[in-house]
Image (tube, rainbow, N blue to C red; front, side, top):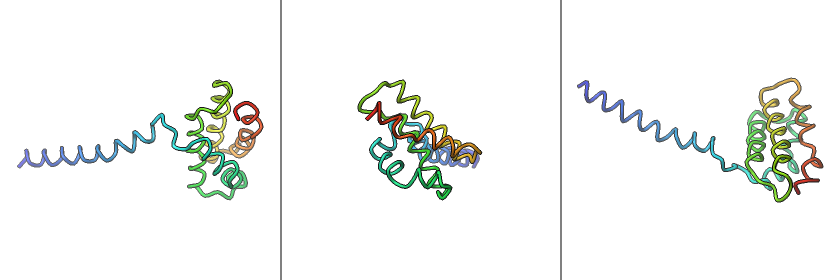
Amino acid sequence: MVQKSFSLALVAAFASLTVYMPVLAAEESDEPKYTIKQVMKEAFKGPLVKKVVAGDASDEEVKKLHEMMVAMTKNTPKKGDEESWKKLTTALVKAAEAVKEDKEDGVAMLKKASNCKACHSEHK
């Protein structure tokens, strides 16, 4: 009886790991979830950044913006210095995190970091 219970517990633990591990791998993957083009279309040209800055975005939209900014750091632009790209996209991630965590200066950080000309002059 003890051996059967142990076997069932072991099978249950293994089953839960096989379900949970792909989720972890997807979150920590080096592959970007969104392309630069997708982020530009949905976040910057689309309404997402504007909604977040205006305070009209849902928690889900704020989370998506953060995911998009993280994806930007994992993408490689067509041109420009890698160090510059890292600096600019890291600022976007930090700003999106600040908004996501409801920090007082989050929106101001996002406004400053989402300066289109700063990225486009070097990386587009």
